[in-house]
View 1 (cartoon, rainbow, N blue to C red):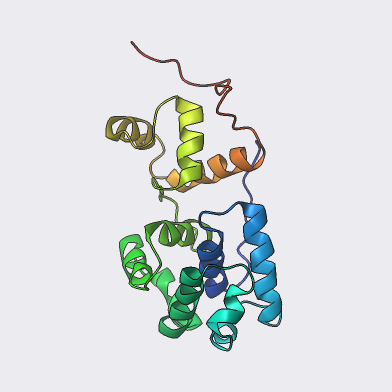
View 2 (tube, one colour):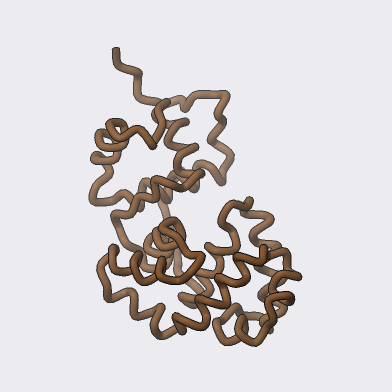
Length: 189
């Protein structure tokens, strides 16, 4: 799958908004919705632009009312400088600050930590895509505490890199639940 190269672009607000919009959606649908919102926002999704729109206008892009309310709440309670300042905090404090915004959960906070802040050791175990790829790779559920403890301990302190490769495998179409991973670890026992 090659080297991982990733360049952070866009504002901190735009990264969180992207996660809120794409949560529970396919990437294609999420991008379409995000592009519509970007158009309404005058080309850049900022807190100020989101606050200038009504809830109905945001929803007209295909965003559910709860997600639209979350975007407005984020824009009201965490302006861009405050979001950028999260970079100075430890992971748990970043999670605490973001999840204090109504409608933002741990998954969104973890995605922000991995993809915007570039934190090296974040493992979003509740992420459906990560769970899917993990099962394909290891033939066992990520939700099993013993499996997670053994396998994921091998990734520390670089769990975020494993997560990035999992997303890449899924996005490249390598993950097929009907076909086991060709380099899966053999089952014991």
